[in-house]
Amino acid sequence: MRLVLDTCVLFPTVMREVLLGAARLGHFTPLWSERILEEWARASLKLGPTGEAQARAEIALLRAAWPDAERPAAPGIEARLWLPDTGDLHVLAVAVAASADAILTVNRQDFPKNILAEEGLDRLEPDGFLFSLWQKDPQGLGLVGQSVLAEANRLSGQTWEMRGLMKKARLPRLGKALAQS
Image 1 (cartoon, helix red, strand yellow):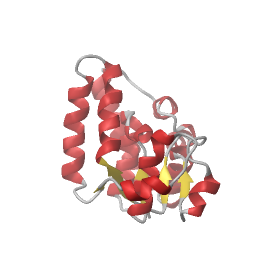
Image 2 (image 1 turned 180 degrees about the vertical axis):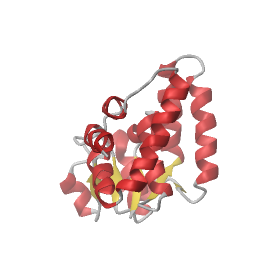
Image 3 (image 1 turned 90 degrees about the vertical axis):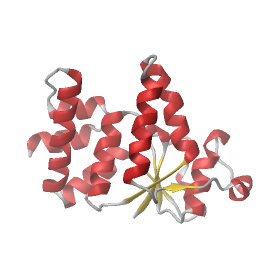
Image 4 (image 1 turned 120 degrees about the vertical axis):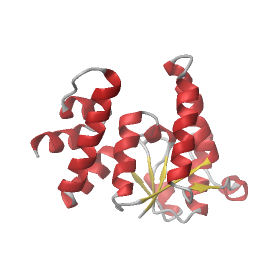
């Protein structure tokens, strides 16, 4: 399955790390564009003066780990498309140009399923998608969750519980599943 990851699932960190952990297990092939990554870098300015530099370092690591994931802009395709928020047309255009199966996003209203279906695409939300992967591969996703939890504890200097960390990352169903396994 080929999925275009919208900026809103790449930033925040916990959601991104769980998704990419699932991709490393072979559950899907991640795709994005330079513009999607640039939106992530700009959004990280909210974290303070070092936020953008940190994001750009993480983006460089992402590009190195997934060299075939970045897809070029598709202005010819973008010009013929329509979405409620024209600022998201580039995401849809990349998905169409890359022959993706779906767009992974938390922005339901910006990516209506009926419009995506016209292009042969689906819209997936991260919590439901990751929960379905956990149902198929509880051991693999469990290891990903444990790794993300350990890193969150290390970086924050706090002791997070799995369910609380995943809930904060907008992954409550996955968090509940991981906490019970």
